[in-house]
Structure formats: C-alpha cells, structure tokens
Length: 100
Image (tube, rainbow, N blue to C red; front, side):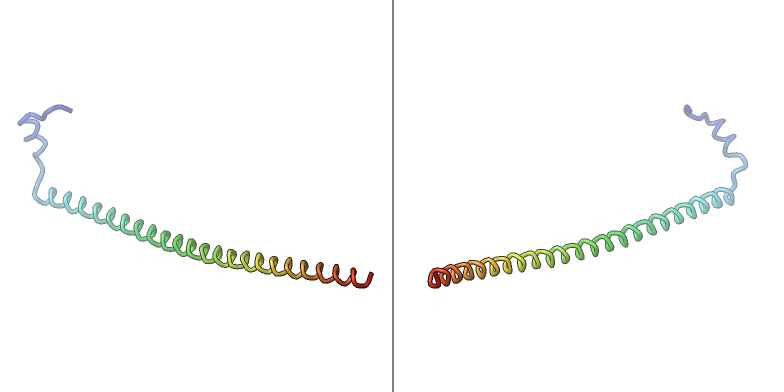
C-alpha cells in the first residue's frame, strides 16, 4: 500500500466524528486491558507452577538425604557385621585348635 494522497485522506476522514474516534479508542483500550489481565493471569499461573516445582524439588532433595543416611547406616551395620563375623571366625578357629 503506497502513500495516501491528500484527497484520499480527506475522503477517508469524512464521516469521522469525535464520538466515533473516541469509541474506537475506548474499544482499543478495553481490548488492551483484557489482554493485560490475561497476561497477568498467565504469569500468576506460571508463578504457582514454579512454587509447586520448587516444593517438589525440595521434597526430592529431602528424600535423597534420607536415602543417603539410610545407605550410610546400612554400610556401617555391614562393617559391624563383618567385624563380628571375623571375631567369631577367629574365636572358633582358636577353640577348634585347643579342642583338637
């Protein structure tokens, strides 16, 4: 679309009144306000989702800490069991020699 001539601009402006221009501006303003509200709503939904994700990440981290603690306890118990078995083996070996 090229440049508009003065005659074309005047022709297009005929019939425009202050009221029509004002109504068009108000309609445009209302659409912009609705879009702004929709954008705000989407941002709030995203913020809620991010809070939920953060909560889930923290819960997962806590579960991982608990699991790590349990694994350490199991390793420690395994070491104690191994030490007990070694002592038992030595004692039984000593008893066998003294009996035999």
